[in-house]
Image (cartoon, rainbow, N blue to C red; front, side, top):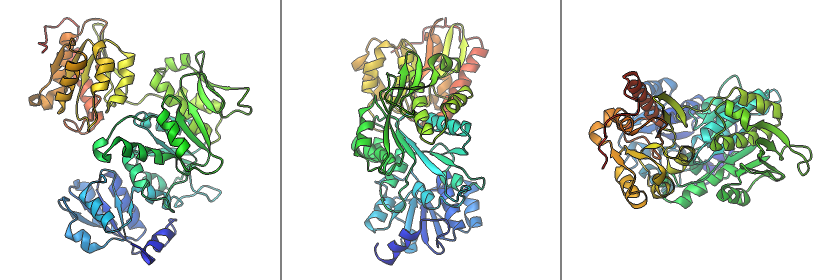
Length: 514
């Protein structure tokens, strides 16, 4: 697409621009897709929502907001979509680069946006008292995104700013942009899928964030991106055009390379964090003190105390992965100009995310821990490292990621493994190669509805006083559960039921390993 059509899109950089009559195809109708359709309808664009399935409430509301809905199989671009001849396609992040409709749009030369690009273009719907829209802070990484997003927003609020977490965290960014209350800062969690779409444009729709971070990088979503390189390249988009602080992990060289290669705004600084002693422009840990040498007046000769490991331990925030998240969030929030005292105040009232190394039961000397949020092997490392010798509940959908390295590093130190999910064969094979002496138990597909009850039963039969039973699946949940949250909730309920029945005492019968 060239000429007047593209020129018009280039001019659409404000809520107050002329969006009327723009023909937009919106792909998908979950929370993100509906927020896109609702926004565009309010802007008086001509909107066609295309989806394979829609829940009843969203389907009912689409004509109410003034859009049209097409529910149809999407093994190819449907004729109705082709005839609609959209000026632009806005895709929900579930649509992969290889999806037939995405391939059609690219071959036809139709511009492809995601919800993040649209939100950046209309970010001035509600402005601050000085007439400017909210600043954006962007957060991605294979693991720790949601915790760091919530931490950063909490620190900004404690510093007196109006801030909101949004994006991949569950609140669509377009809902935050249109909130009439308005914000000083939007803290935007971004998935690799959203970043892939953002990487398709470097024009007026490309965000210019105040600060950005990729917390870490490990193979994930390879079936969506097609390769580890494509996944890495998508993550790297987070740093593009950053104006103030590019925050990276000193323990993950890949994130430093992303910063070094990024096209940032002149004057942006690279801010490192890790659990070691910080150098100038870094945040780190010195003799149990979280210290900042990046946002102090003389960072070569002085440092500021953020908090202490002892203080974090009192809040169950002292695990190494959590300390890293805190340091990253502190760097992001301090880049917005808040004081160190505000960071401490936020931490004093912060609670860890559910399903992230969360104790859900103790009985008979056995501790039951829910780390259902460990949806890939890299995410499971933190809890397995913290609890060597645990009885490990593992499995689900591995999304093209190899679990062999995780089992090689941690499997032999586990007391037993309870294997759940659709992709059990890779787990069996990995244990056979790397930890053949560890007892292995399986919950087969016949128990899908009661998978957690059966997993807890098997773990209880093995456990003895002093043991930890750890749900750290290292895999996605969609084979048996709607979300990782439902997986964790079912685990917690199964543990509670077991304890209530008096069975979780650690002296059960032989579970029958194989």
